[in-house]
Structures are given as C-alpha cells and as structure tokens.
Length: 101
Image 1 (cartoon, rainbow, N blue to C red):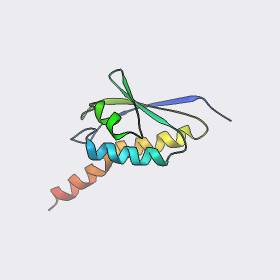
Image 2: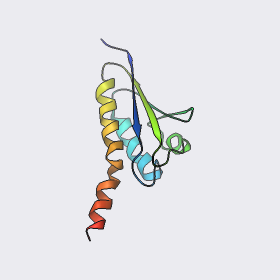
Image 3: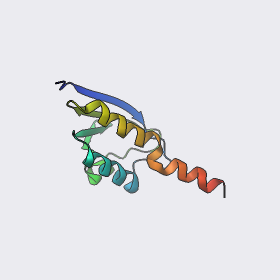
C-alpha cells in the first residue's frame, strides 16, 4: 500500500479562471474521487470538494495551482483533476465551438 503524498502543479488555462462554474465542476469531480484532494494557490489551501473554498483561492487565468493527494489512488485522482483543469473545465471546447459559429 502506497500512502505517499503526491503533488502536481497545473496552470489554470480557461479565461475566467477558477470561477463558480469551474469550481463546481472541480468540486463535483473531487467528491467522486476515492482520496481527498487539496488545492493550493498563493499560500492558501482548499479542499477540492468545497466550491466556496475553491472560489476563495482567487486563481485566475495563468495561475499555477498545486494539487495534493495521499493514498493508493492518489496518482489516478490527480490525473483526473489535471485533465479537467487542462481542458479548461470544458470551457475551452465551448469557446472553440462558439468561435466557429
């Protein structure tokens, strides 16, 4: 059993940053994960399951946030969170779709 703490740094790439809808998507994903994920930005930390805590981080576009998880499934959990953030919380594909109209 591997209980090492795993961390990943990831850049916020969507134009509105970690706003309400993005925070809700992240919190929804984190709630379904088998391990607790912490999100840190500028010396503040938040439980990824808490929309309000995530909003209080004030992470805008270009911000680098640090993700942290511990436990056997930490790598898989962080992979899922990084994928959501790298996709701009689904907003980048929406922006591309709207630009083509």
